[in-house]
Length: 264
Image 1 (tube, rainbow, N blue to C red):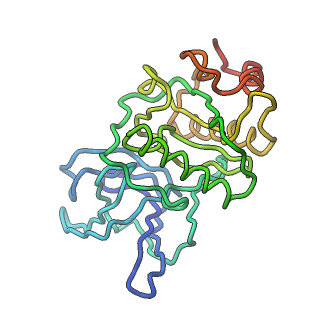
Image 2 (cartoon, rainbow, N blue to C red; image 1 turned 30 degrees about the horizontal axis):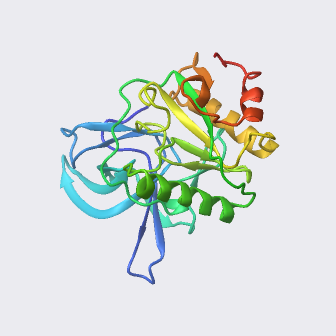
Image 3 (cartoon, rainbow, N blue to C red; image 1 turned 120 degrees about the vertical axis):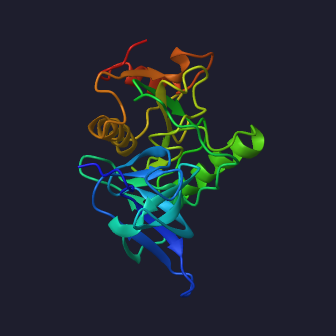
């Protein structure tokens, strides 16, 4: 059952007790809102296990105490009645049945967006595959460094509000939350409102990603369909299908053309 009051989230914040990271863990899919109270605008529904940074604010409304959280760059509120607070790991990840391991923005140390993300108004019916055209990574530490580098380049080099992609995949087998399921990205010109952008770390002009990365991409898409974040009849494309670019690299592009749902 989806509750109308708060979002099921895992929130991380720092306490004064030696700056230990704390998490608030909830158990059902619920809503997050633009303000403390059920009369405020609904920003989205967060599935169980996702992690969103607790900004520390608390307000009481409609008989509930509300926590101020960062929801994909939005200043958001969720009722704490459905949250169980406990110490969390330094690099908090979120995962659920049928989904790959998704390292949250808080888990990889993302910078805050320069302005809130716009939210998608319809369930995406396209998935766009990209590559970073960069060096590869095969450990979580190395991949986090790459994701941070992508974000810095997009924000400081291109002056975007945040990292461009919806998700980033490493050859360590992890998925790294970028703008996430619900936010409009800046990954595919003229197509940011109809699809999600998945970027694989590395350069795939001459070879394909390893099995760990390929499985992570496939499982992420399946996860999105199962969660209702991607339509079941989605269309898969490479970045070059809709733009003048070599992305996602020749070998990866050749491969995704053999996958279900691919359409030029």
